[in-house]
Image (cartoon, rainbow, N blue to C red; front, side, top):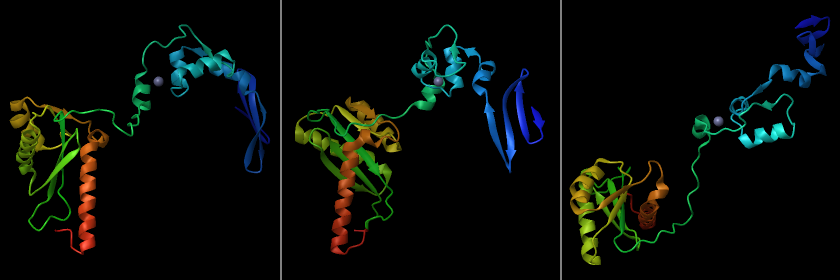
Length: 238
Ligand SMILES: [Zn+2]
């Protein structure tokens, strides 16, 4: 770097890269030779190195840049292939694909029941119920809800509802799906699913879409209850 009276000059190997002149409080670049010098600064590298230099850029784009001579100094050393998955790209660029708007899965009677427990609710009922359990039969989306005082009552309530489904449909349950978030599910798996040969399916954490049947049933039921209470002028404790 050489400074002169009204500015600065940047030199590399005796060759001037660019010079700037001071105008007021700003430096103005007068003459730019960065393109020719860039070949000294960045010479060549493997495709893997270029991929990293360019912020994990798409490999096809890097090859295009070289083939069309778009970047001065970009030459890719052999081998010009990147034969393995870049772990950083896999970690940094992965994203969740959108869920289909409508499920195309067709369930037969008692193939699947989906269960969910919500609570504690901000306003318990007058009888002290703070949790809502929802069990939905997947083939007809028939829901049964129960209000519970504590989570510990949930396993018994699910067993009772499933027994009722079984008796009324004349078929035995094959699968049960839940989000596996709570203690009562573990109790249910140990004391009910394993003994009766029912397969327990779990959903991916924080993926409500996979439990959409029961989530929708809960939302609909809660909205109906709230609207009826508001229209009757009664408080949420009812
Ligand atoms: Zn990468």
